[in-house]
Length: 102
Image 1 (cartoon, rainbow, N blue to C red):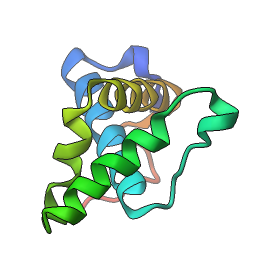
Image 2: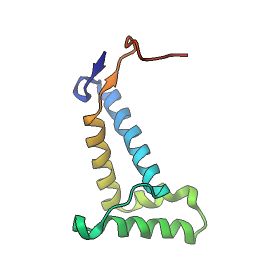
Image 3: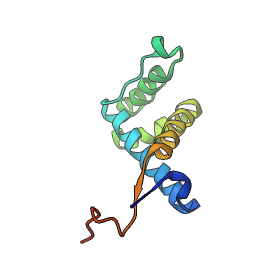
Image 4: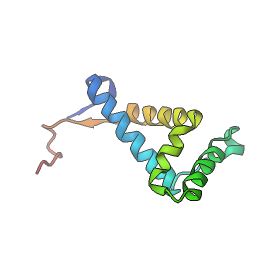
């Protein structure tokens, strides 16, 4: 059985968005997701690159997500993307025969 985002509790919705945001930020930091500022008509990737440059310059790559968070535009945009991703997902229930619990 599966549930939609709307069928989740408020706590489950918050957790779903948090997981989606963590995954997205990880992909952005590792460079597997990049944005095209010209095509998108914004400067999101430029801002991300600047934040990553700060992490590199300060030799603190483990704080890369914090540098992204410091830019309100970047963080709001990534959070919005994570929200949409979480809303589009289906969530399995514990009684789903394909869910394995150890």
